[in-house]
Length: 561
Image (cartoon, rainbow, N blue to C red; front, side, top):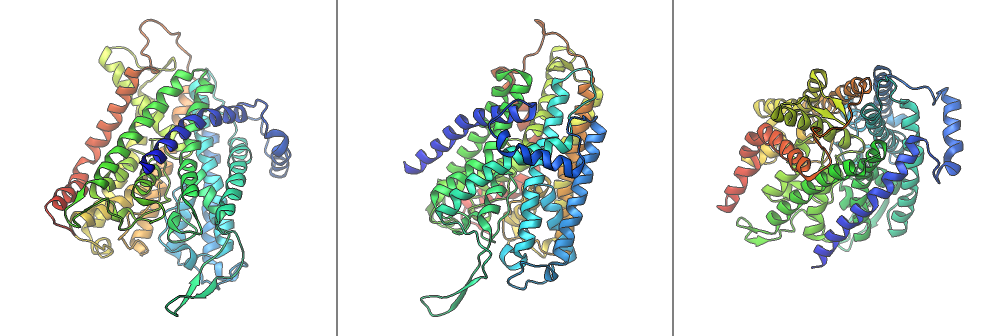
């Protein structure tokens, strides 16, 4: 009963707070007065002066996209070099060596794409400087990049006969200063008060009750833990991630971590509604996301609490943190894979087959069930365009969305955005299953081994970053393959999204008539959910059938791998 109450409280808090934060962000990005302007307005002005950015100058989609790509390329190079020369840089209290070139590439690609996949143990691999100047900085700016891209798409959909989509540098700056930074400061203070560590001290050596020496890692963990959740970045300061008591000390911080994972992504839906001047449109998208989230959670909870014939128990605690229990571990696994975030508080490798499949399928859908900060909204808008096109074919009308015609160019770009991550997931998984460099890293055989590989490439292409576990990914093969997977999964969607934004911005708006197909009612919500599930099912049912589904039936027969 206690666990059920916590789940209900989480859902209520998410539904109640999202419209409020969404309205605030709309004020920030539309340019209306808001209460944080007097507090941080000087910082925004100072950044523009130092950088030479003219925030009032708007960009067309190609210039905006150029800014996105250039900024991320610069960030990737800087993060790569920080790791390669870590041993010679300050704030390396444990004298950690330089990171290998292939792991540096993988980590740089991971953090600039908002993925935060980690093929390493944070406390044993990266110095305090690299954790802060490299990873934490990217946690802010990669999230801000996602927000900026969705703002450009929103303007393209809501403006008419123009090529102006805003200013990338201004959008990113405001995202950091007025949204991510204030929330991070507040939550960091809460986490420190609960026992999360925030220090530059050396690691501490302690003597256990058995008389052995144990090294206890420390560091500025609280500040990074907060922004990794708010920015749907994921990863962890420590290898145990959100299960580590120095990252998430109490059930209360666990609750806040889960809420932080979804709150900005879900609130951006209502920001979109304010741009459209239509609360009904925003509610339709939010309800779609919420239904998919609730159904996935229900399946995961049912599977996890069902009887396990291999272990002969129900509600298996293996691989789960005793402070949080089964329900909060399952809720976290669903939330983090819905939110394009790699943070975990349990081993997904230890989840029941169907629970693991739900987490995997959440990522395979394109991280659109709330999704990443910004990326979740522009991802589901791609599916909205596809749904509107299909509905138009069914009724014999030219498809329209928000009064603008959906034509061949928009459909080509939408299909490209859907296909890019799907292709690399299946292609790269097939390659890994076919060569010794891929299968030699497995910890399990059979369908569970396939799930380990499939999950890794799904996590990378979806820019999620969570790990199934059991797979040794810190090899040249996996670091390079997963690195390229993350880059394609991020920019293979951003490029067509920006192209759609530019094309739609130039179009005129057709007045609403009796024949207009509505996109703000329950009929459209059900149609959108159907399209999302059909596309995901047709694309990924075969590998899922060979992996977690087969494993589920074998588990019921008492067979394990």
